[in-house]
Amino acid sequence: MKRRLPTALLATGHGSVDLYQGIVPVLVPFLVAERGYDYLAVSGFVLAATVLSSVVQPGFGLLTDRWSLPWLLPASMITTGLGVAALGLSSSYPLTLAAIGLTGIGVAAYHPQAARTARSVTGGSHIGMSWFSLGGNLGFAVAPAAGPLLSQTGLRASPLLLIPALLGTLLTLPLLRPTAVLRTGSRSGVDDWPSFATLTSIIILRSIAYVGLSTFLTLFVSQRLDLTPGASATTLFVLVGGGVVGTLLGGRLATRYGRLRTMRWSYAVAALALAGIAFTPGPTLFAAVAVTAIALYVPFSLHITLGQDYLPTRVGTASGVTLGLAVSAGGAAAPALAALAKATSLQTLLALLAALPALAWLLTHRLQEPS
Image 1 (cartoon, rainbow, N blue to C red):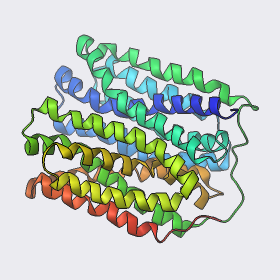
Image 2: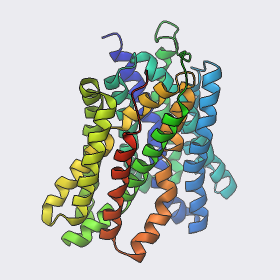
Image 3: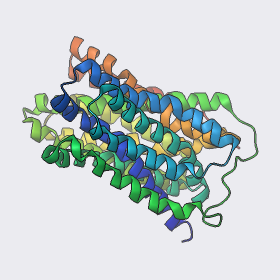
Image 4: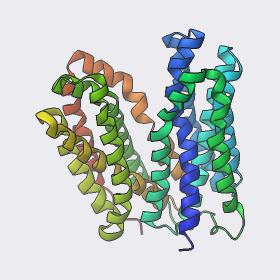
């Protein structure tokens, strides 16, 4: 019971930060419509928001390994919100790019310290870490809700988008009291870098598979079932809903059966279900989407705890890589996936994506539970 409130507060704060990761793509059409930016300019925004954040994040992990920096939680939240809020205050491209870059840096600063704190407040519980992960996933999922607000007012309403960051900061402040959480310093032990490298490869494969699926799923469903774009977009709700179920299920399955066994089964199921999306006829395709989403999200929080256990003296670094650098690989691979789909077909692309969780399944057999 003592851990539930801090876990809930931290999960909510995690959601308020990851909300801003999802908001940047929502802002792109408004930036194009109001300021006439071309595709090259827009690509700079995406680069600043994602790649910058992912590259910087392990650096913040190194800092949190050396010093305890709990103040980074509220500071990074405010920084992230200020970046998005500042978008509507200037029409200058360099200043807009700097504002989005500020958001990316805020996101990067938050996750390593937050994951360390989550490990502390949950006592290393797989279920607790799954709730922390769920908070971030939900924040990212609800980001498109900013669209209707901006469609009524335009970018001049962007300062209102600071509100989630302020609320998240207020909810996180109680965690900064010395008695609110356990000590978040690094544990003693021996770092297992080869196993961590294998785990990182698994996360990259999972990231590419999920980004490819989420990017091209609605187009594929629209073609295969002859649906309107609006109707085919319902598959994204299935994808998000499956992710929620899978994130929560992962912690419970790991508690009962162990992390590695849970990961192996989830990746095996994901490979079969993803292939099912490509070849399943009729509306049963939606069931394959749900199963795939659940299976791909079951290992999500387990990656974090396993990485932290493989690098017990560098928990911040492990968190920065598992939550940032490796996860962003899917976005970096998106152009190559698009080229492949154009050269072949969406069905071929989805069928080939099924090989990624299958390869991840093979790699899990090279891992052992940390001592």
